[in-house]
Length: 237
Image (cartoon, rainbow, N blue to C red; front, top):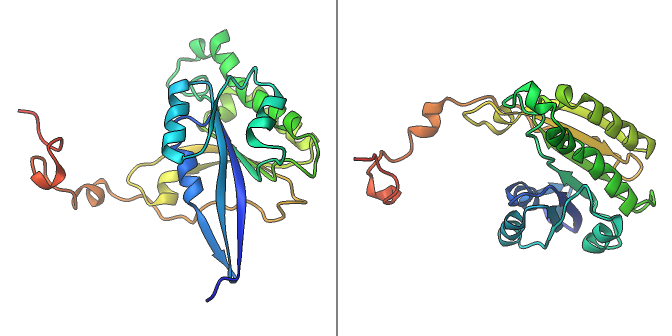
């Protein structure tokens, strides 16, 4: 089939980290009914300067070192440009929501402030692009599954804010291991907020592939001390 049309969609990343998630998204392409589509990365925002350098090195896109809690909407708009990204993807800090952190510590002000960053991000994006015809068509947020319980209040007010702005919001928990055919179960929380006027197709999860056995992954690999795998692939003496 000859592809006659190509569509390029833009993406902006908040809490971008070092950029492997953005890189994976940027590499995604699709072909439907003779048309193709791909992503263009407008840049990522993170408060860690080292992560920002890694992000630019890994993705080739610009980075902005800034704290989401204090970043001015005008500065975000200047960074991403006057036209809003078609999609924004966020991965707010999960420490306060993680079950690895004792509940007493999670309740401290430090982690409660961390949990609020999701709500700050929602306010920031809506303030940076207040025009309903010029704002992200899709917002995707991922975190640990326990975000739904430990951060119920933050999640609730974020959903209300997005719905009041006209987005259709869906919250789900899914297993990346089963979707990716991996040898490890990896549950994640995902919130998607869709402007149904400008993004009429609902967000779909990848098809179920099931978990693989650990042996399926390890068996084809060279044994330790095999020179084909390099000098680091060895058993300590």
